[in-house]
Image 1 (cartoon, rainbow, N blue to C red):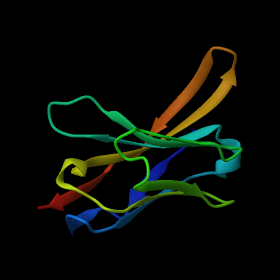
Image 2: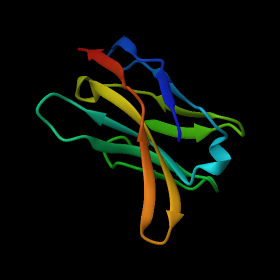
Image 3: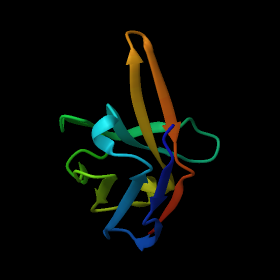
Image 4: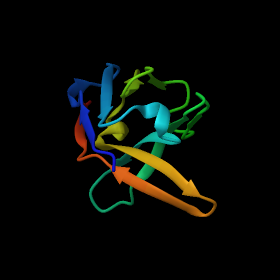
Amino acid sequence: QVQLVESGGGLVQAGGSLRLSCVASRSINTINVMGWYRQTPGKQRELVATITSSGNTNYASSVKGRFTISRDNAKTVYLQMNSLNPEDTAVYYCKADVFIRLGMLNTYWGQGTQVTVSS
């Protein structure tokens, strides 16, 4: 089991920055992939960025160059968000994927943190 707790959301003006944090209940070195996703009302949850246990990262094209995902060597994954615009307004969720065996993984989600960007 993995519990995830996000923090760092809030209200920011367009062009501003926020840093989100996701603290896991166990070492993230035991978690294969961690990521940030976001969701707005009436839309599907979408990938923002992911980072593997070996440090490989992947970004949605809409945030590439503005957002940076990173991790410490303990229990926290970060999402640095710069040059925010109103289209980034959403609830941001942290996700953890733990591979059990080929074709099977366990997925865990945090409760989400609201990010609101005003124009």
